[in-house]
Length: 324
Length: 127
Image 1 (cartoon, rainbow over the protein chains, first blue to last red):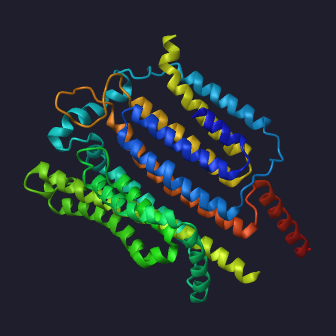
Image 2: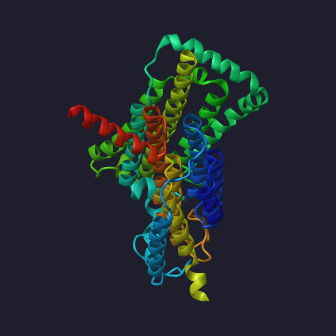
């Protein structure tokens, strides 16, 4: 990983750099598996190696491939980095050793999560029970952050729809189609399975690794693949932009309303035990619904981001074609 | 020797973090800065996950007969941080695209030069 990071520093061709960043994401995902963090590895593999590489490639395609030599001397930066790194390494001498079970992190709230969550929540995957129940507030905040980022991208990159550009865009799409016949056939057979897998990840998150975040990203990946190979306008016919925007807001709303309903039922905000007669059943119900909310928001925000990026690109291309 | 084996994970994290930091401050290209930020971010992820690892433990999914699990808390924090990270990265990239459209370049120095030039022109107009 250090090697890849160093290569990113040296190489000037942005395409190679972005590819290396994707490999870096995949390597770190396998590292997370080795560290027992299967849920995290799942997320990193789909996000770090998948979606983020894709978005960066789109940006590189729109902004140019080469990097110019920096005019200022990097020596000062190097010295600063060396000093900071030295101080941080000095700081590690007091840290607990790797893998030791008596480190401070393992002695505060973690034992309760590990040993009581089966009794209190009834969900085998502790990561899910901590994510959705014990730390439901944090997750709610994070879903809101993702939603806000989606709005931000939309505000920055949205293109005013002009019907006269549509013909030009269609022409670009059609020319792209003929080049990728094999890919299109292969992807078309894969997409249903990817979507099915996303649903499995979504609803099986209680028992195995998975949950709303991963499922959302996988679901979005299937739609994005479709949009890449069949053209944006075809994908827009399947899922319209206003519909996705509505879904992203609906996900956050669903999450928040679960909290409000549990308040109405006499518990505190996001306390699922009061949602059903049996506290365990209530927890199950609550986790299922909020994971659904998370999945909805994540998937639709990812789709919104991709749609905005590629719509911007088509808009630029159409404009360029018109002016030349 | 035990110290090196016990602390090497932190050192890897620090080396990665510093490479990311160096990319951010030494390179002018904005996309490269974002990738630098990503590397920095990943180093923090690795730090959290490696802190949560317990020697001889298994993944935190409840199973009959297993009593030693790795700490699930850092996993939760990082899981959400990754998805939030991609959302903010996308926002950054969107800003870069707009900068490219407005200036025509995405190198920090050139943008700075253009800004300064615009400022000088403005001053001249005022005089």
